[in-house]
Image (tube, rainbow, N blue to C red; front, side, top):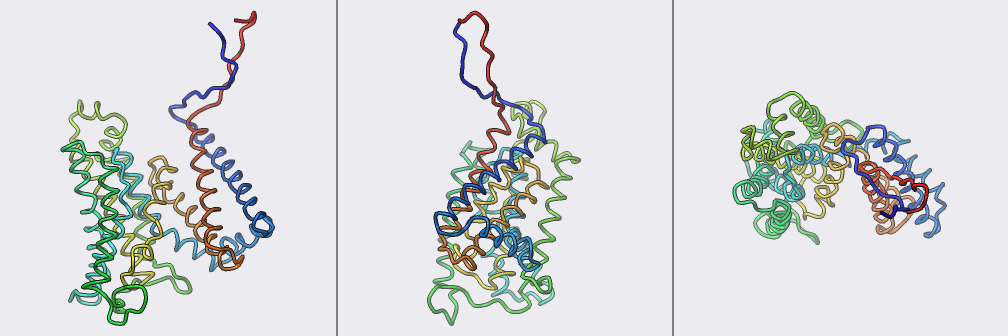
Length: 363
């Protein structure tokens, strides 16, 4: 038998946490080097560019607040997705669930007669219900008919996009619209309060942090969490143990969809104060949060931290456009390089590079 002289990858079933940490840090460093090349090609000194980006984000109180604000929808969505992924419900529809929550909250803000002190809470309830409903059908189809949830959740994203486009160009069109279509502005009592001196709508932040802690507790200490972990790890063993796959999958889907709906409430009630076109409400938050959930490996608390990292990248892109006077494509390319570097690190976390020894004596 001829020996193999090339390196090979051997799978690591449970990668050590230290390996995950240093490999991730090394991948971020490589992403920064690659991004520095882009800066240099554009004619900006990489060291000077990074100095500006860090100073205006992490080195400045207003920049830090903007990083948190960019992270708010990502935290809620990523925490819910991390929980759903643990139950093998691969939800790619958080973008549509966010938009469904935004539309439901807008309907409450614009057309309900709920007393002012309770309007915001009614918006959150409506947003959670709408997002959960948007995830309910794919979960039901998955368990009952074996329909791939990746396809159904993804297709429902487009239903949400065109549904909102129809609303803001039709029955909900604002009375003073000029240019892009949007709804009338929300009344003052339907706008989320912010931390003074920032644009951080604190109810959304509190909900995101509470959700992360609560779902961590659910996974670690409750029967539902045990069932989610068993179903996600081995569906056959779950069936043998009598775990109801329909009930567990629906619970995971409703929680993930509901949290994405809450993120939509935060965007329309805390940032835009009206229903706008889908691309303005969410520049891809639902898709980006998938990356945060994957990086967290199904851990809700880690998903919140990963969302903060992605929020930093989004905020740095805004700084690059405003202060370094770069066209939008350059910051987006740099963000893509950083995200690609982090994602690519997964293979080195899960697999170990081995160089086989060559036996003496040739073949």
